[in-house]
Image (cartoon, rainbow, N blue to C red; front, side, top):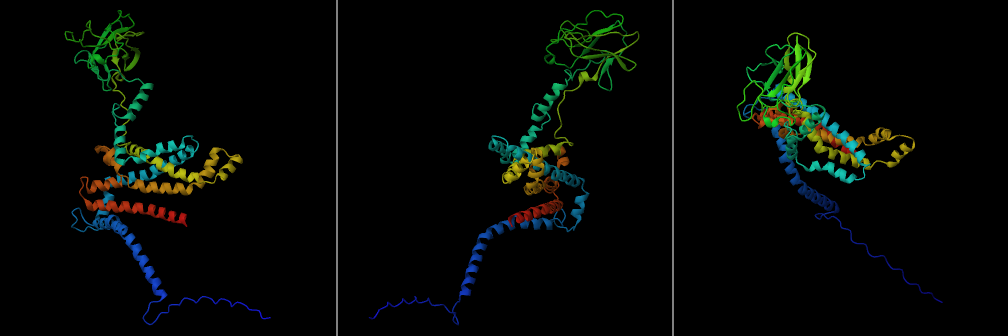
Length: 461
């Protein structure tokens, strides 16, 4: 018997392989065309950004470098003269000093505050709301923030909220004078001393009564407890009595130097009996202005109203004075950027391995030890990035200083950025020197930028 088998199917024919002929394209040429096409597309997309970068960054930098070698008019080449002049100018040296203060103080405080707040926020129930509240100042422009703090730092307590608080606290612990503008009439028996006190022109012996009349106090500003002036009973042989009163009769008709019936005493005034330059007895006037200096020996005395009775009221702190203007502006900068530092550090904190922290706690470490020996070392890369970023930012700070610092102290608060503007456009009109300042600022910022870029690349690799 014959067995029939089906023939096996033959494999499909292979597609023809293109062979490069003498004039035809090969596969290598096709790949090259594809690469060129991709490059052209990439360049087409990048070109607008490169043009913008060149117009806004590269060209201004090169122009500033070239302009720094010419004089104020831009016509005469001076070489390094602008750079030499820059370091001879006291205003530039002040700007360098202030810039150094900014670079050291502001990023350090911001990084520290951000770290502390980021750690504490983790333990707050409403952490998201708290972060939002602290981050909100970042939404405020430097111009608006400068105006806010310029008003807050006003020296007048009726306008500046900080001085209003300081004056209020000061008033709790120390009373101010009720009669800062009080003074005696000329020729009425009281002479002013160099220290601001007033004393009787003629010596007074015990057993006498003294009337000390003052003016310069509006009747409506008298204390509510002030009563009609009265000298009190006749003085004894070892005492001096008298009255300190407002020598002014409402409506007129009174006699200067005489206690009239409608005149009121000045309560709360300190009165001293002075002998040989020393106060031997002290009294405080009553509601009717009367006083009594007792236990006096025989002899002549000067009745004195100390200068503290006429001290001007405490006006608070001169936040925008030459001594405090830079710390005050740094305070405004902290208000704006603390939320930024906290959010960045908080993001790094959320990525920390919790098992390390829990293991340390299980081994008996307290929270301070966990924070100092584990949290901070693990957060070191994040803290470095935040610190360097803030250093770059504070080197360029301009708006806050220009807005907050008043004109008379602008030089005391100036930094390199504001000095560059002032020299170039703010009255100096020397763009050669201003360009030299700009180049100096660029040279100071570049190392921090290079450090930040290298660290970022290492973190990505």
